[in-house]
Length: 325
Image (tube, rainbow, N blue to C red; front, side):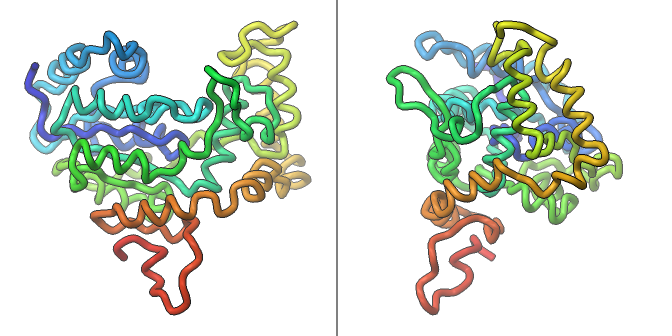
């Protein structure tokens, strides 16, 4: 086994938690980090191999080779949200990926980025449309019980389960929880705290042009149109439609997405959020017990005040809603 760098930061996602911003803007040499692999390389070496022939050596070799000569104070990073499993398929095998990562680099530090569930689920559905999905949100969130097939499962977003596994594998002190809400509230402070955990002593504040998070979803009021466009465009989800006018997320899909962001559509329809309304109705209270367990796992301060929690007993301290404040 080649010698793994120390420190090494592995960021596993979740999807839709500013992961693209971190990969493109934060995990760069100017901030004391260096990305070692892209999604394709991580997929090929960690996620794609069948369990019967998974071998940690190819990823170990890549990490060792690309971290060589890293300046003092810089931290090598492996980052891909596919390491939490795919949300369209219920996060299947996220536990196996955790064990594979431990076989690859048992001394690594782990970053888990999360987001309040009633906010993240609409974004996941909008990402489903961006990849060519055709189901209405009600059907998407139904998942499937057909034996041998996988669909959406809310359990994938019960964060405590996967985080507890990573704590068992890597040590609780080596697992860092970053909420998207903390990035939105104070990006500089959140990035500095993460750099301190990772050991990136070269971090000296965020560059001004790295402070904006890009890649917002198309507005929810456009869902009925975007979903129907996917019936007549090729995509990774729908590769053989009856007719094709481009490839989602490009072609007609992108053109309509561009138009609905322009006046007068946001003013006329911007208050309509059918996916968010459905998620709030369907999943209200679903994640409260999981979030309470998550709060109990925390070994450093993490503000979970925007996350659903069980009703507080009369006279209970407000700290029950916030971990280690």
